Amino acid sequence: MNSNLVQKVLRSFLLLLFALFISDAIAGNDRRKVSLLTCSPGEEVYSLFGHTAIRVSDPARDIDCVFNYGLFSFNEPNFIWRFVLGETDYLLGTVDYDAFLFEYAMRGSGVTEQVLALDSIQKNSIINALVVNSYPRNRKYRYNFLFNNCTTKARDRIFEVYAPQYGISYSNPSQGDTMSFRQIIHNHTIGYPWYEFSMDLLLGADADKIAMRSGAQFAPLLFRDELAGAHIKDSLVSAPIVAQQNELLVAQPRIHSRNNLTPFNVALLLLLFTFVVMLCEKRSKKSFWGWDILLMSMQGIVGILLLFMVLFSQHPAVGENWLLVWLNPLPLLLLPVLIYRIKKGLSLNFMWIQVVMVASFILLSPFMPQEFSSALYPCAAALIVRSLFHIYKNNICALD
Image (tube, rainbow, N blue to C red):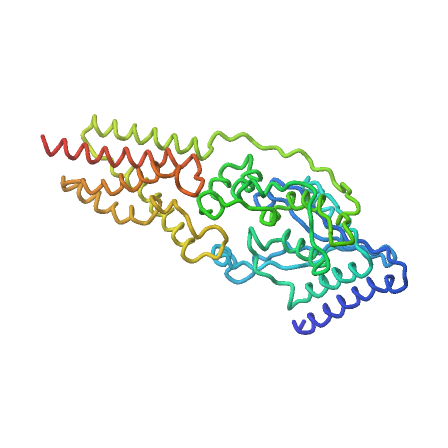
């Protein structure tokens, strides 16, 4: 079918849908309901933060649908590459309410509904905005994990109803006033140490800034709690935004399988094996430089990834990463020199570059404006002792 025809049909359908929504309001019999739906986190990595959507129902017209800003397609050209660059586009889509609820029931997620206290004019405004936003030419938006996701888009649709006539006030304190973005992320990655470790690698110093109230609202559960205590205000009126809160689905207990191969434990094994390699070298009077290839290659490859993200990615909070002090491409340049000089019996004092680079991170990390994963310190220690061992062994051999 011709794509232009499909778009015209869809546009006509959405206009008809909006016309049906507002007809009862015109007749003075407005039973329409607009609600925020908040879904609790699931077991899969992509669902660890939960989800947010907007429900619009009209019992008189037997209409009950959900506007969902969390749609994307793996079939988009160069999806993975665009995701790495932070150029992923998400879509606003609509789905039947029962189908939406069934999907989250199958996942074992809880779903909370917050019915908004809106008059007919405000309902018309938000429904019209959602319908127009659903047009094929309008439904795509540039996804941003912290500042432009399914939750912030739903928040903006709701809050814009009250502007500019009203302001928003809150009766409850915000976790965002005392927590950084990274701390909020850590609250959602409990039981998923490798995912948390990878996030800590990629997120730079900007993730350790205090999120504040508006920043923390990127997390669905936090925004749900914020909305529960939100009021509209002006000189004459102060009323809660949420008229009623319902628990549509009860979350099933999340089961975390215990895995001892956490990043920190693996890093400790790496450090221990480094000592074992050095002991074997001392006894055999040989150099097992294959271990250096592994250690310094991992260091350099991670450094290339971090440098790429800093220079080219549009993802938020990756642009100032202090891990580049020691996780950078330089070890890949030092590695072939190290192997050549080991085989030729030449001086290895140039490895002081590696020692100074990694030691600077360990010594200065408490003063850096960035929080680092504890698993990185055993890895850094392994690189330092390995480099010092090469320098010491080479100098002893030279004296002999």
